[in-house]
Image (cartoon, rainbow, N blue to C red):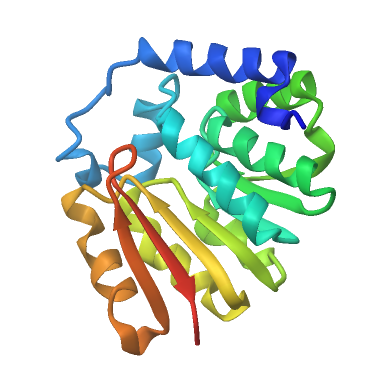
Amino acid sequence: MTTTLHEPEFATIVDRLFENASHDAPPVDRDTFHTKSVEERVELFQNTYVPVAPDAGRLLYSLARAAKPKTIVEYGLSYGISTLHSAAAVRDNGFGRIITTEMNTTKIAASRATFAEAGVSDLITILEGDARETLKTVEGPIEFLLLDGWPDLDLPILKLLEDKLAPGALVIADNVGFESSKPYLEYIRTPENGYVSVASPIGECMELSCRCA
């Protein structure tokens, strides 16, 4: 059986996006970008992919296939690479939906075109604007949460959605190697907060957590 990820047309699109991303250089030092406002970051990174690593994308696909979530919520669309991996899993599962967020209108337009080309537009809803506001409208239960935006906002976004997480929900945070990720990691790794969590060296460090409370 061939997965959606391995279908030639779909794989070509994903490979093209990764190739485009490989030519990007961060517009600001990774250790100081958190000093900028969200609006300043959006402007600075408007043409930058900020993708998950290829092996991280395959991990996301595998986890979503195994968990079979009805609802995947993603904080941080960018140019849609991680979203494509989630969409491939949803398509292969035969059910589910993805809700993702993005402030940058250029990235939203490019991602919509990519999703249409890949034939997965019907699986994805893009909430336009600040995720701290737009995600308030999302109804639970959420079985799969991907935190793939600004690392210092991972904890506020998690707390915003925490009451909507289903028992056993997976929470995946990408790029947790930043200094600004420390509050999130301290929270998610504290057993009293209701999670079992493990660090993964995949990509630029991921944190894989299960909501147990």
